[in-house]
Image 1 (cartoon, rainbow, N blue to C red):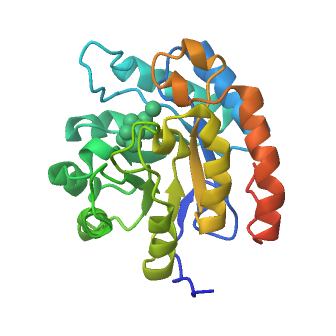
Image 2: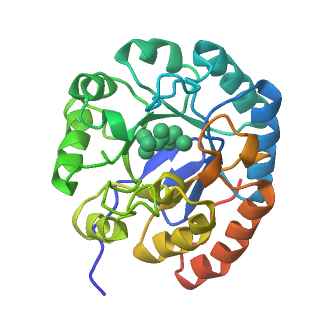
Length: 267
Ligand code: PEP
Ligand code: MN
């Protein structure tokens, strides 16, 4: 087996991403209401997630689609995070949001559409919070690393990479999940790497098998979309797991992580 580079792990409260344990980040694509986020957060925490996800500023391909709750969603995210004592990752889409977000979010997510937004990356280099940088959907691994270096250059070395699939010619899947990038990055770079099998496939039934494959490829964790009723979700329901399916994922992942000597971190 090829040797792995030593990982520069990132700490979020008690959770270490890129450390000895595998980490699951889970939650809805978008924050929809306080009750909705609360219910989802409590359930994913109980099932094995140690970080909550939930977007409030949504970058949608169609301007008619739900754009997220914006600053109201941020207040909801803060209350739920504090009540459940669960760190949260939220996507930042504009440098002007950083001031409002910095006291709420534990990890700033940079989405695929913004991987090349160097002014945003420079601003995130100035803060003292972790940044999860998603791969641009047509980005070379080299361009992705250089984008991460923009954050590092600013003085913030808490960068996590997230493989979320790249655009390819096939229409069966939303994206082509490039798991070779994960093994490559673990062999050649020091960043923690997590995998998003939800956007990476765009197909609910493929999320669990690709999660297992991501762990085997050497990923440090997962970012998974979970919703109480995916068919009613305001965004990305087709690739979202319900609570039972998420529990099934964790149940299948658990024994594999033990074999890999990378047990799941639980709160
Ligand atoms: C997301 O995680 O909510 C998201 C929009 O993902 P991506 O930027 O990878 O499309
Ligand atoms: Mn989504």
